[in-house]
Length: 177
Length: 432
Image (cartoon, rainbow over all chains, first blue to last red; front, side):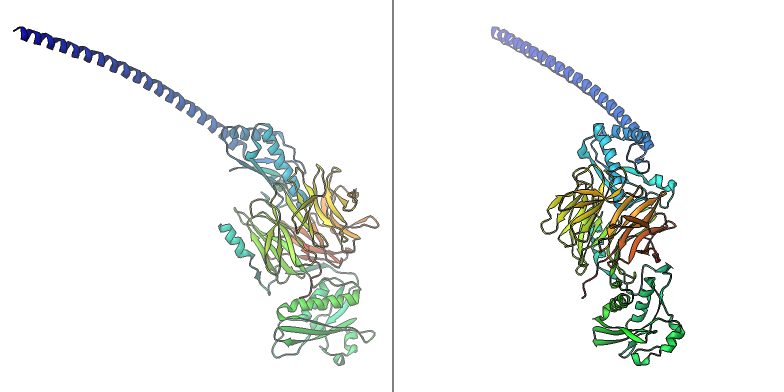
């Protein structure tokens, strides 16, 4: 009997130890789960925030794009002039704001009306494209992102003579690449 | 790749000998043209002659404005030898000179024309000559006969046996236009398309020996200068700089080419040694310097610059390195070309907002406006200095027109289709 009692005591101790061991294991697991849940919640919140931020950024870019679309991609010039008009700089500002949100490249194509010689007009078209390029670089667009090319009077937007046609042809076209 | 393939297809010459793209309309002749008869030439072989050479000669002389050829139906007789000429017949129709000729084959591929010109009043022969060449070049042989007759009767060498380069553009609605660089005889006949592209082609010019041409093409979506050999079609891209690559102008010795580049900031004139491709900068100015052209002695260059505020012609002396202003009359003088005598210079001159072709005598410093239409440009002088070919507008179409150096003779060369521009009259061609 004594032997039995010893055995039962030993068994009790063993159970107790096992119970204790089991209890302590549950506690650690709960803690880990709580931590993971907190992390998941934090991650979820961060993801939400990022999505909201992205959505806000997309909305902002959409707004910028809408402003660019409203401003158009053609800037017009006065006869024999390569000075940017107030309209042209306002339009350009919308393009610059959009260009600052991404790293696409732009091609600036300078054009003139038909008056004057062809090669002189090539040079004038280049001056117009360069005026737009310079305005862009001053406002923070890296020059390697900008390509300029002059078509002179070779590619009129409107055929025919007279100021109504000529005014459409004295232009710089902004092309995204 | 497709574009490249298309381009190379188009580089192969397309010849259409029977059709002239340009039609000549004489709008103003000389006050007192010489009455000349060009009697149909006798054909010494079986069948029909491959080309009506006398008709080519007659048309050439009429186009010069200095001659009033007798219509064939008004000829009372059609002599082909001196013995067959009855001067009385020609006096009756107020004819001053009679041209006769005989055409035969020296061999199956070679044509020969023997021709003579007689003075009706003096009843004597004033010119006798012979021209030979391949049958395929029959029209060019006829143009050489015209040159000889013209030289004898006017004292000025003829420039009929020469060729023209021009650019034509066919508009395509809602798409890119078609540009063509075309080579034709001086009468606009036998057009050959040398290059066809959906991107602009411009500034065609000739090598001094007439064997090569240079031009600017945007086929890479940027301007670049090319040279092209006419006989082989072989071509070489000479420049590919950032910015402008324009106005190629061969030096009179053929060794270098003046051009406009803006790689160093603003458009300036450069010289390229064609053997080494080495560049020398000629002008160095923040203004627009463009449209270089050589004085015939090759010692100086004329160019357009707006360094004085508005475009004017300047001269750069290659020996001294000095630049002087050449034009002072009017607010705008641009794109000079100089006659072979080095004395007459033609420019685009602005007056009352209109652009005309003007001729300036460089010795007397006198400027004379030759044309009266509003958008005249790209003047090119015949190698004999007699006529100036230029581009103008008729309605909203670009056409070519010509005016004599004295302003007395005018004709137009409207195109059957598209806009035609930038004529370049060849130098005298080497004989085959």
